[in-house]
Amino acid sequence: MTDASTPSLRQSKPKPAPVKQVRLKLAYVDLWSAVKVSSLVAVVVSASLLVVNLMLWGILSATGILGALQGIVTDVLGEGGSAIIALTEFSQVFGLSMVSFVINLVSITVLGSLGTVVYNLIAKLTGGLLVGFHSN
Image (tube, rainbow, N blue to C red; front, top):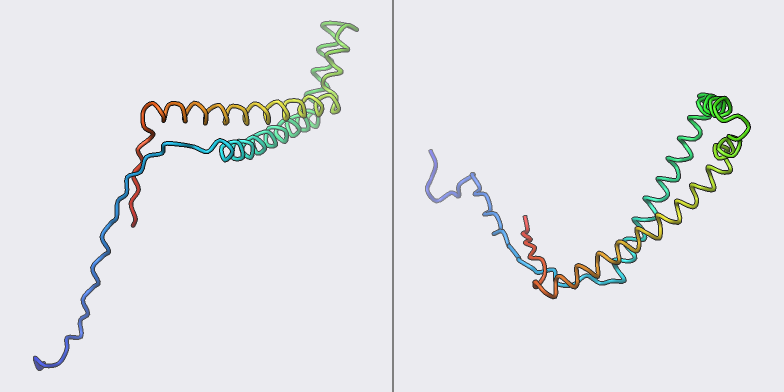
């Protein structure tokens, strides 16, 4: 039998902390921060596309598909197809991949910057984007 004066062995669970909710408006995006983030994204996207281009050329070359393609172009166009065949050499593929790397790098960075400018203009007109946060 238990005595009423002894404390209970069962401990009560602590009450969970109340969930705090905050509603904020995203009214402005810093242009320089957006340029830095978009340029990092552009580097990642451009580098991955460069690697994919070079890997695809390596696979097509190793399997003999490029050789077969060169044979078909020579059969169809004769000696006039030598300019097209020259585009399938590694140096040409690498050079064109580097050109696409630079174009992607610049264009993604510029598009990220323009997106930020457009968002900031729209946020001035509408008051911004309402975002809700809560803690667990």
